[in-house]
Length: 283
Ligand SMILES: CC(C)(COP(=O)(O)OP(=O)(O)OC[C@H]1O[C@@H](n2cnc3c(N)ncnc32)[C@H](O)[C@@H]1OP(=O)(O)O)[C@@H](O)C(=O)NCCC(=O)NCCS
Image 1 (tube, rainbow, N blue to C red):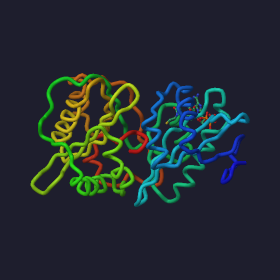
Image 2: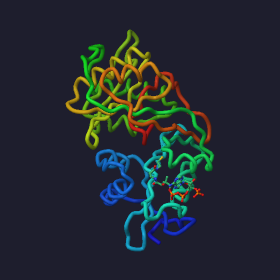
Image 3: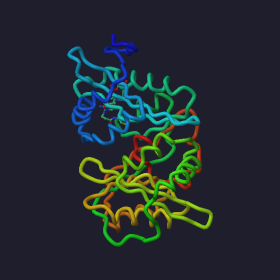
Image 4: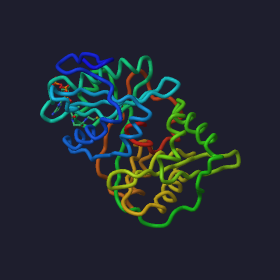
């Protein structure tokens, strides 16, 4: 057993993976027809804990990522089991381990149809939905926002903390390095919304988007999208249905939807101002 490894309930040993395993994680993702999202995995290795199980030959055959924020909120993501090892209890064992490591925190995740029955059995309940739109954004920006400067980061951090009900300093600190764009909207009392866009495999992801109103969210999304060359992906929260038709009209087709699930309590914060996650993996 590797140092610090924990026996999984069925086969294998759960261990903490390092960024040296990044390529192995990308191989596993592709085995499950997920894209090889290197930039995203690199961030997850940086701010989260990546748990994995190897087969006897050392190949990574299962992963789960736990990212914990200050203030009792954590996100679980990248729950993946190799096709040739599924239905042997590995997914469940990794989930049980990650939930244990999250302690008393409320845990949030986005569930595919494959994962949902497993999560329900582990005590997760559905608290919303995420709708993934992809396409070439058409039409002009809203010109209501401006690029963020380093001086805005404290205000962005405060806004993000209010809306999420948890301190995500680990994300905000990395935003300017990770994202290609960060924009803000301002009212009389200061910054009321912010949005970012970051490069992913084959598209640019717009997220997070936090805003004081639907109109503000639309303006932020349009301004960020206007600065993107190529297809964008927008994971719209289900709380704001009026944005879905607008996104379709602006060229972003609806591709899939996933269930937002939580365990250990409802999602904290002021979720009415929460429009788009940074990425489904992080909330
Ligand atoms: C979802 C996934 C992680 C489950 O891993 P696993 O190791 O096969 O899961 P377990 O063996 O621990 O089984 C747990 C439960 O998951 C569900 N499950 C697993 N594979 C399933 C499948 N092919 N179809 C439907 N349900 C499935 C079942 O409810 C299963 O319990 P059961 O076998 O007692 O009925 C795996 O199928 C996978 O990687 N899928 C593709 C990626 C994905 O969608 N991940 C979830 C992201 S939210």
